[in-house]
Image (cartoon, rainbow, N blue to C red; front, top):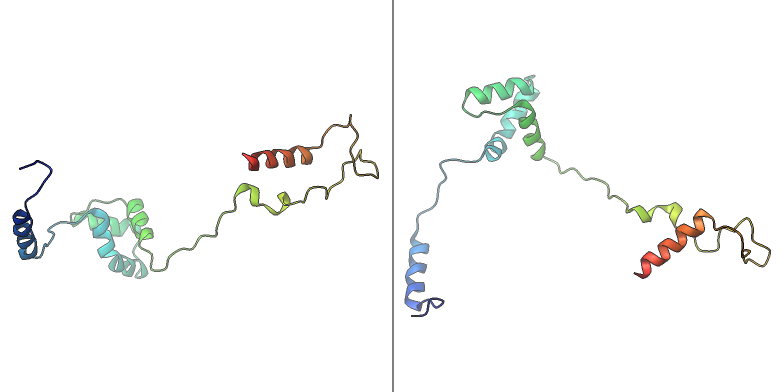
Length: 137
């Protein structure tokens, strides 16, 4: 039989084994999961006046070695209400960058609206040209 091929009879036998497997029960959980399971009780202790150091010492004496700062960090992961952070604007989305071309007149412009040939370009003009060339790429 080819190495990359599997017999249908083997698949049926594996299906029966997988379906007949007993319910899996974990004997151990990770530190994060343990704190997640204990979080309501830890918060209740906090409301009764215990400090995070005292709670961490209690957990450590019971076999869960954890620092108060780590405990606090883990508890912040399991807050009851999700924290909604405001969306960050991209750097180019600021309102002061949305000035339409030609809205700001150059100091050396004549009434016709054309800048003189020898006049140095302003910082605004250079920034607008840089944005235009970046958007074309």
